[in-house]
Length: 292
Image 1 (cartoon, one colour):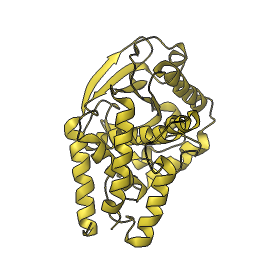
Image 2 (spheres, helix red, strand yellow):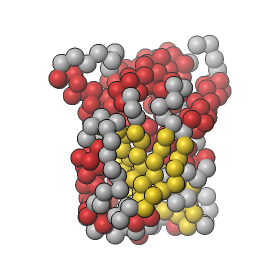
Image 3 (tube, one colour):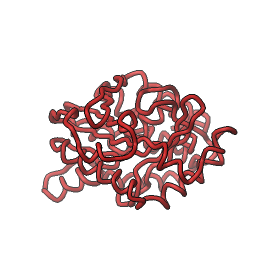
Image 4 (tube, one colour):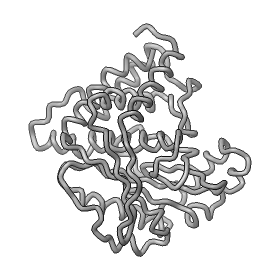
């Protein structure tokens, strides 16, 4: 692709525009232990190409901690292009052929897991453009995506503002064809760990980075107590087979954060594997479009 850096940012902006045009956020439905936010429209045929470009853009440094697109750290040139191509290959593979049980395990626990995290990142990026019901307010900052599938720690941390009050969003993404209940439960284990203080160093490090880019009046609210006093827990589940997310989850009920800030973001995809295959294809093609 013969394009300047500005054209790349325009391409990525158009990709987010396309995702936003297709996606609908349905206002939260209160269950007894949590709130369900349903997201539809990701199965539109335009989305995988746009999502693939966005995800390569995150790897190439085009998405800042303020959840905005920027060319400041965007990878450029042939050497960087091959570096990003290698990273993409390590994350999603060279093709979508998964025949053996071992290959299918890689697909489900590595490739789909990383792309699912990327879906959550994109949805929260849209929440920086406008309020979407993913959080009770507008996203101000959002942590970078993991560069490797096996990196431990929190999938996403962000801050959001409502009526000049800052909150912390903590997200955990799960992708599953047929085990939504078990994956939802696994996500809840992460939030239990947060409440036990296990992820305190990670949260403090991310909030410290956010503090420097928040607006005056918000940065002063970034204190060690913020993530324990004003956090939203966001399990993000991308799945296929029907599951009733209104089912009570006692583990969620026992958590300190109030019901309206226990928001389960659910994305049901009738063509689950087809979607992930198409996004993977979109990513492979996008390397030459995004790193110029």
